[in-house]
Amino acid sequence: MKMLNRSEILETIKMISQHHLDIRTVTMGLNLVDCITDSASRTSDKVYDKICSNAEKLVPVAEEIASMYGIPIVNKRVSVTPVSIVGAASGGFLEIAQAMDRAARDIGIDFIGGYTALVQKGASAREKEFMDTIPEALASTDKVCSSLNVASTRAGINMDAVRRAGRLIKEAAYLTRDRDGIAAAKFVAFANAVEDNPFMAGAFHGAGEADKVINVGVSGPGVVKTALETIPDGDLSEVGETIKRTAFKITRVGQLVAKKAAEMLGASFGIVDLSLAPTPAVGDSVAAILEEIGLEQVGAHGTTAALMMLNDAVKKGGIMASQHVGGLSGAFIPVSEDAGMIAAAALGSLSVEKLEAMTAVCSVGLDMIAVPGDTPEEIISAVIADEAAIGVANNKTTAVRLIPVYGKGVGDVAEFGGLLGSAPIMRLNTLSPLRMISRGGRVAAPVHANKN
View (cartoon, rainbow, N blue to C red):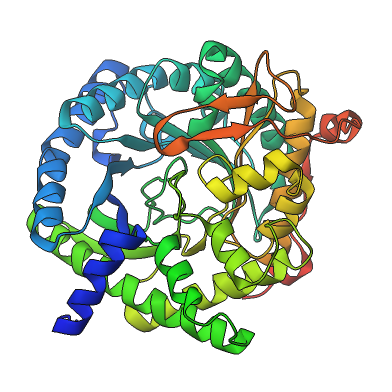
């Protein structure tokens, strides 16, 4: 990659100092297949040892790179082979979760992902056993994140897994009801999960990945908004071109950091994920970009079209900048982590139904949405099914991260802290989908999946 010239360096410094450009995460992916034994305690010990021996320098290296290039690196994370596979021979899934959490604390990372099962077409007896441990694993650990892939365009939707996911979310939230259901914020249900995702809660180390990989997630909603402020009267073609050029510059920074981190850690360079991932900080909002494009407030008619243009332009700019753009690149719309989304949801401008429409054209799905604690599990399952249907039909990744907040209802606010922020409790349609969800079985793959 060509080095940045002086003007680009100065421009990047301005992006960092004034417009919230950061490396959102440096994530090390680790293959744990060689940790598999027929003993739960031995497997857990090997998992702990492998994470610590390979990732012990992740935090100091990230801090050194941040100092070297003058760019903040917000999170340092590890993702591992799906634990449903690692523990298949021995069981002892909760022991593995505790080992992961202990390793994460000891090496000083922010989160560790991969307490995961891929059950888009069916689940073995051992995978069902694993899924039942998810609520306790998330409630009893601080840093472990979990996911289920319940659907894919090739396989269709595993409605038995969807039904189980609704129950798991409720249980996880109940076990941490004194903390506004924070355990549910560490769980995501996917359709078409990608295997090189550096972002939590859905990161895991895919079977097709190298043994030890560095994936970087770079984010800069504030940079994009500032660029658009320079063309207040530009037409939408100019808006798209401005976003694309800005995304190109952001991705160049991400690739610089990713390659250096991989070199210093003796790992393979995986991907740069260029996702406009917001934070609760003022000026670091995807909603603000959409409003700069011309909406009175996010949620207005036209929001989905503006988001589609933003997502597409971001991807085009990233692909121009690096041959290794991957993950979930595009725009994220987590309600609790975006000041503009929070404001729109609190005022009623943004509903769950509008967010669902937006997920058809953005990077992930219904993300970090707090709902009343008394929401029945079948309604949560039905929301997952709807979102999975969008992903399956459109051959894209979609996901659901809902947090039932016990003791709170619509109009109250859930407090999660840190990057997870706070979220107004949003209204869900309370008409019952129980009969449909109770049927179970599998929704077949769409006709366009049958290609080879």
